Image 1 (cartoon, one colour):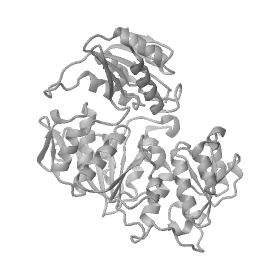
Image 2: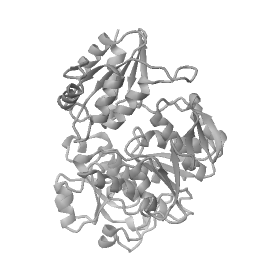
Image 3: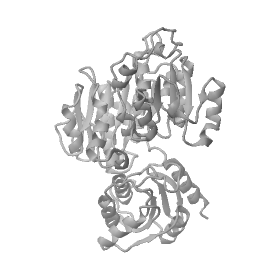
Image 4: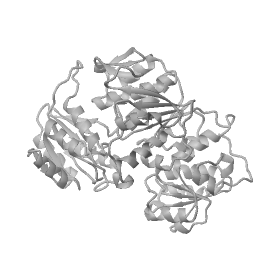
Length: 488
């Protein structure tokens, strides 16, 4: 991508705020931009903005972050920092997706009539606005949903790569890179990005060639307030699509299926139950356009929820012309991402499985079912006894689905974190007494080892956020790995 040429045009605040402006890379020259939150997305977008000629001011509520090595490198490249972002003199602001519109700082900036945008949304606009001669890259495939986003994103990217395409894979994906990182790289045929409700909440420009909506269940209600508002944020992924775009929707999910009239993209469906869809599961196999793709016993990914993820990825890449051969190769070899039903170790006949990414109760229930009813070597189902470690930071979500799954599938449950009080009360109400409440992960793992026997599995599937005891789900998963590997 060539450096944008200087231009006298300045971004219009009203246009940016309403999302009807024609912001281009050239408009960034000498623009004053505040970046709030200097994590992965903040540092990535700051690098691009500096390269594009903007005057960048960085801010973070954690003072130590402003002294970190990534921020120090940005300072050397010309970024300044401030500990008073509310009074910064800037044209517009890029806010970390983790910072909601209800935060006092964002409200102050809005009262000052300063446009607030999201990193992924801005990056998508820059990709779309760059002249073909400068960028030469391809369209965006954006994937959202409550559960399964990361796995489906990675599957989609690998299927495209397996067909010979060059692919950028990232967005909200962890581990992964923000979409802004792609702006400083060579062109790709496709940009496959995971998108969260936090990112979509402020989206103005995102217009994916293919938008995938996997499922919608209650999550992040501590930010969005209601399931309806949360779902509306997710479904904004469809709003700017036109007749040249595609939307892949889960026919089985009522909230997702209800969005079939939203946006102007051409709608396509996948289903675990119906046969009148583009991609389906039937008779133990995955089918696309009435052709058998693969028997599910040949999948490396465990669990019914992962079959759904496979259906969605297949539906997306088939719309882009990918043949069945690279799809089959990917399905046979893709074993999943870190912290998502990740096999850590087998010790004395016990499998230790890390699913730290399960940050809501519905995902926890899915992980528990997947491990308890794992496929055997010949593809058949076999029941497995599971010692479950669960719990974490409360998110004001319903937990009945998870506690019922605990009663049905768990040999023993070990509860940790803020949610342990509520979970233990619900288990008592179900008449399930096979649980302990322990103070931390280390103690929980020792207790799990004592309970597990040859042939059992110890599953770490919190079902809640990590922030009561850990920085994020990755740090939590790494802690579990370390404790497991330290077992003698």
